[in-house]
Image (cartoon, rainbow, N blue to C red; front, side, top):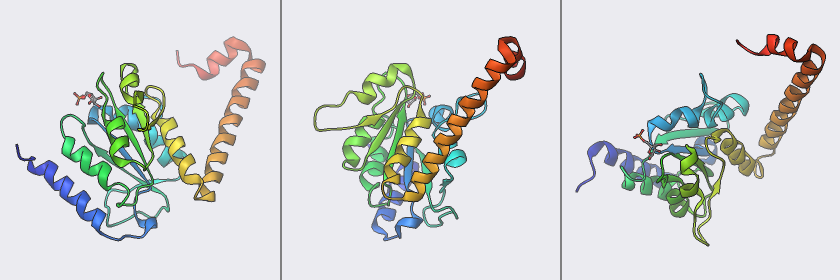
Length: 217
Ligand code: RP5
């Protein structure tokens, strides 16, 4: 069966991009792929959902989403996002993982749900030695994401924790870019401040007062 044109055009585009020689600061640093657009609420986060990788990168760590490979946004650090299904579009998964390093990516975050969540583990095998951080979109996806044979590594987060996957990705990048180390440290400082604030409020307002202030009944 020939690959349908909408998939083939994406594959051709990835392969063409891999042939070009763009400076590192103009290519996405992080690639986010997910098995289905139904994974987006978990992978992106926001509105009624806990924060995800998009929120971590775009709202906490100053990254911008790059939507045109040939036209980088203003921010120094960027990420791109694609739907790549291991089972529905295996050729696209192969092309994405195989070209990732040549396209300038430094780390991939790959999320998939269901019991056969193979996108993260297959992407990790094909893109090796590029690091891949797997996100099991559901609890039942954990085993298939992390169950890799010896010699075929993947790093993974707990079910649904794509926010942490983004932090891990930036931790990897921060070994090369001290500016990102600072952003991660600032994020953690703010996190601690928030705990300090709610702790003081809970103690000083008492439980009923705290519930009045923070809980929407
Ligand atoms: C997986 O199957 C995807 O990652 C998704 O989590 C799940 C269901 O996909 P849809 O049927 O919603 O497209 O491959």
